[in-house]
Length: 612
Image 1 (cartoon, rainbow, N blue to C red):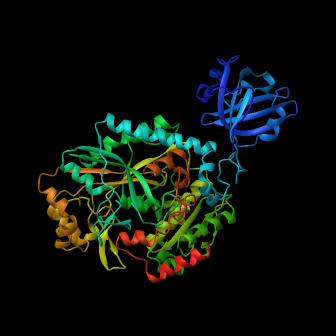
Image 2 (image 1 turned 180 degrees about the vertical axis):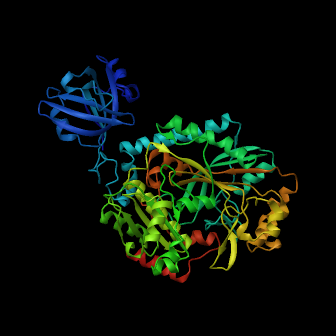
Image 3 (image 1 turned 90 degrees about the vertical axis):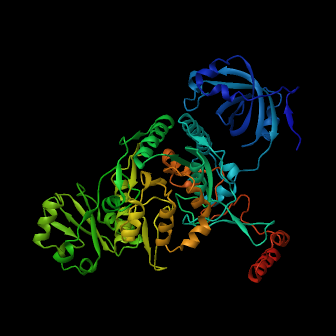
């Protein structure tokens, strides 16, 4: 479609939006001719005057077209929302009654002299005037290029750019070297499925996309790069969730040589402190960050990423197994509970809703008892409570008048999972999770191994390249489930921001660690011979972590879904609804790789092709 110019002559236009960040700046342009361009955000035709809100990346400016303008009639018929136009005109000061305090250009407007349509627009499939949360996510992702026009998304992308810029500057200022590591590599036991890339030139063999640059950054330490970082793309074929993006994500990969665990914490805490204080108006609850052992975190919060902005810690109620006639308690492996003080008016429906949270977590239910204002007790298990038990609850568990006790009895993992979710729900209901506060903590002393009941063997609980506390001697003498590693997470507000560890840099210790997890010495040498060989040439002690860019962004931006942090995210089921990925490839492409579709897949694709 040809561009249409509603004026006698063309005047070169250039955006002045950058000159109107603040309303005071725009006053300097009063009486001057300017040339602006952008999208029509809104049109208001008042008969004698037409008002256009013109939008670009900096905001909105009001355009006024008088009915005496020679092209007024044509403009009123031709223009539409989201058209791209260029305007030349004179900046005027608005009268007091027409000042708009809600926009930075609210004290001025532009009297249009010339208007050019650069591009037309079909009606949008959704409004971009809102934050977008009320719109079906599938629709938003299909038309992501339109979704990005909304103010919230523009702010997010700008913030992400500032965030990455801040991170790079911080690391470089503190002596780290940025190194890009390979994107085509070999498999590594990181705990998720690999994305496999078949090789064309080496048929029958495959690369994998890195789940993390773990081995490369450790080899950089051997290579003398004592302080490394990278904004690293990582690829894991695992199911997405609210705080985990499908397929690919980015992390601030970090490694340092010649550090202990505490050295590393002391070095890296300022990154997060300066990040919060520079980029946000939030406050940090405690500095330095608390160090909480893993088992303590689980016992007190039911989670290894606890929200420390509020209390309501879990308490041990195992004594109820033998002191009540409640069969669920008698059969349970563990009983834990939360005493909620000063909630005498909490409704039965609210308590039942908390029970649903526990049920959805896999627990058999949520038992409860309440001490009413008059000192008496009621609740789902009140009839099982003897006077002796009630005295214990009042004296040792701080059940004052108006307190509510919530209990879960089951095997430990279910008890922790259910009460963690119940605790978080309580925090929301009682207004305890202050969005303006960030409570960081280091979770330390993770178990090196866990029991894999499905495969009847020990497996690494976290990073397999971690140094066990006590080294080789501990691996040889201790029970695997008693071995604690120099592993740590940094967490905040119920988000795990990064996992890390002091690494295992001793060849024999590394071999023994993998042998406990079911690998033979030969398998370890076959899979990690390059690392073992490198460690024989003078490997310094080293450690690091890798904060997830998107998780940290969620924390700083108060976003509930990680997909809001990406410009072009995959959907909740791992699809790119805008580009149509994943998609089938041609048989020729497969042939080049020495591959072919199996019979079922080929039949399915042929059926889809016939169906259009």
